[in-house]
Length: 379
Image 1 (cartoon, rainbow, N blue to C red):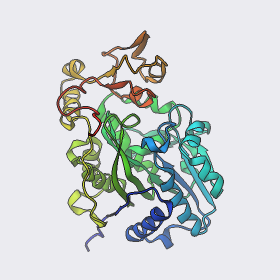
Image 2 (spheres, rainbow, N blue to C red):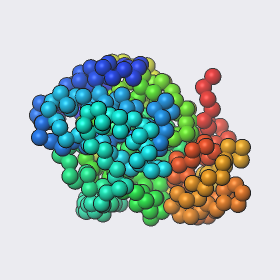
Image 3 (cartoon, rainbow, N blue to C red):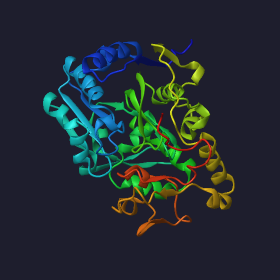
Image 4 (spheres, rainbow, N blue to C red):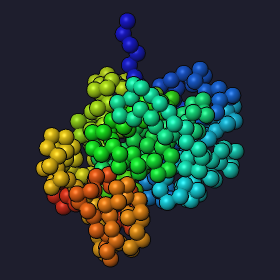
């Protein structure tokens, strides 16, 4: 008997009009699943948006509140009372919920705000995981009945692309995210850890805000770019493959997507049933996919050579405000303030947590001047 193909629904959407988004999402969800058997009034449902930093929605670094509100309205219309909105971000999650519009949604629809950093850790053991056997997750993951993963489509300077799979890194509590970066060591290990985490959290639905994404120096300091799409799927890997194709990134360009296919966490691209609208492709400005992959290969095969060629944070002395957040957040203490931040290249693990945390857009990859790399604004 042939297995039913995994569906990814895509709808053209050019505005953050909540009513229009709600209508589109209702159609999309009916295409990819049986909502009547999936959603029930008695359930506790956790919505996990991308709330990386306290940046206003116009910066396109976080899942837009209009998309989250549309999902909340759909759940409310089905009688769901216990709706939780949660994440663990940089610079204080309380501030993030306010600036990113989540507190307003929670107040108007009687939802619960869940600061993953302010709650106890639920350590989950999963034998079948490749790298992360024990995961320090927020207890909200274990306490809910169903998880809706709501990523934002963005370029990521460390792994090239961030979407459904990468978004669940935020379910790890607080500074444990930094510790994992330090303990995992290699890019290969980190990519497998992302897949272990996704498999463990296992969201029921993945709904992506791709109306305005982020290109260039993502995931927090890039440039907003209209890609005019909403995507939804029950499978995060399938959703990411379709989203990547819409912004000019191939399956083989992103290491954790390649590994996810090898681990059979989702269908091959040719096996995905894409339903809905034909949305024009918008190619995002991004680091060179070749260099990102080459660095991973060299790190794996010849670590000694990788030490000389690996990308490290590069600081713009005109933009740097000497706030010291980069020094504070570095998981391996490889940054020291000496007027400007100075990086110890030997110790740096090229995770670019500092770049993600920098409010001043003062950090780029050290290879950003090479051909095909950078965050040039679109003319």
